[in-house]
Amino acid sequence: VGAREMLEAGKRVREAGLDLWVMVILGLAGPGEASRRHILDTVDMMNEMKPRHLSALSLMLEEGTPLWRDWRAGRFTPVTARESLQEARLLIEGLDVMPLHFTCDHASNYLPLKGSLPAERENFLAAIDAALAGERGIRPEWSRGV
Image (tube, rainbow, N blue to C red; front, side):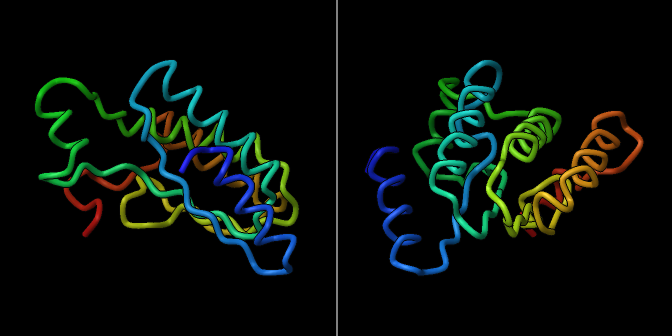
């Protein structure tokens, strides 16, 4: 299933009057420009799909999966914690779906965030900025997914 099909399915669910909850994965495209493009495309899709609930999880490589094998073979580079936070920031900054129940508090995430947009946007961005500046702690790698 491609992006266009996912977008259309989401719109149909919403238009049918059902409560649409979407999950996205931060870091899925890898670092650098791919990361930036992936999250901006995700923002565009969410703004068009208009879910009422959005959960952002962070990529974790599971042993034995194709992406894990790509990483072990040097064909994929995962994002750093910093890059994951930067993706979360771009996502929150760009969303214009209102109101939106937003969660980024899964065990895979480096910084738990949960609340409503746009009401909590500035608080979320400030928390991310503090974490990026080293003024606020993030979940250590060893405890992600526990």
